[in-house]
Amino acid sequence: MSFWKRLFPGTEATEDSPRDTDRITFSTDRAIDIYELEELCDAVGWSRRPLRKVKKAIECSFCVIAMYEEYQDRRRLIGFARATSDHAFNATIWDVVVHPDCQGRGMGKSLMDRIIAELRSADISNITLFADPHVVDFYRRLGFMSDPEGIKGMFWYPD
Amino acid sequence: MSFWKRLFPGTEATEDSPRDTDRITFSTDRAIDIYELEELCDAVGWSRRPLRKVKKAIECSFCVIAMYEEYQDRRRLIGFARATSDHAFNATIWDVVVHPDCQGRGMGKSLMDRIIAELRSADISNITLFADPHVVDFYRRLGFMSDPEGIKGMFWYPD
Image (spheres, helix red, strand yellow):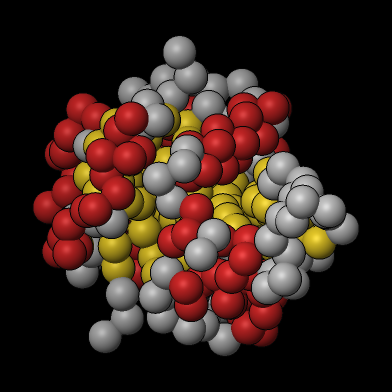
């Protein structure tokens, strides 16, 4: 069953009603449906987080990118990324997620290209992120370097 | 020659005028003297950055900590750190600097303890940074972990 059929049952193409081509769109609008975002994060198996804090994090991020697949007059959130920044030198990208049904179709690259373009348009040149081991190669292919000149990403967690 | 004598010539103690004990104070005020900050960054050999952007970065950081050594009615900037954040989950600490004359006296630890406390008071639990190789051990001693569970710090720079 295709992604759209799963998402929008009854939308499959028929001879009388040919199915439109899916269209991928991007939005930087922070007024994102956080329940839809939670559903997307659930789909990739992320731990649930308090929605109040998710909302705050979105409001206080420097930029957010939501990626939608559109079909007729409906759209479905299929990707998301956001970045914190000092609005001048540095940005850190967080919460990069692409729906499992859409992975392997270049959508992750499109999403990352979009957020990098957004940060570059704000003249931010030091773009960073913290990559889980299984996505390090994905980010390398996009031009990210791990530990350049021995710089180490470090984490502090409360006891 | 002591740090204070270098900073404030003529302030050395005499029998008639005993020298006050130096007092270390911290400030989260963003109205920091950016020329004094530049002088501090020069002292540790950092590359110069446009002051307009430094000012913007300070304004748009989630928090800044300035560390002063005070003597009588004068104070001198001897340390600085700032953090970007989404105000909810994550923070990244940038531009940690301690004047070379004050290094090795626990001031770096005091500065870091202060910024961590500031972030923790805002209920931010994922505190991150990117450490140059020569300070990785310093941050380890403060409880930071490098590459926990294989998570890699990654950087993207413009061509």
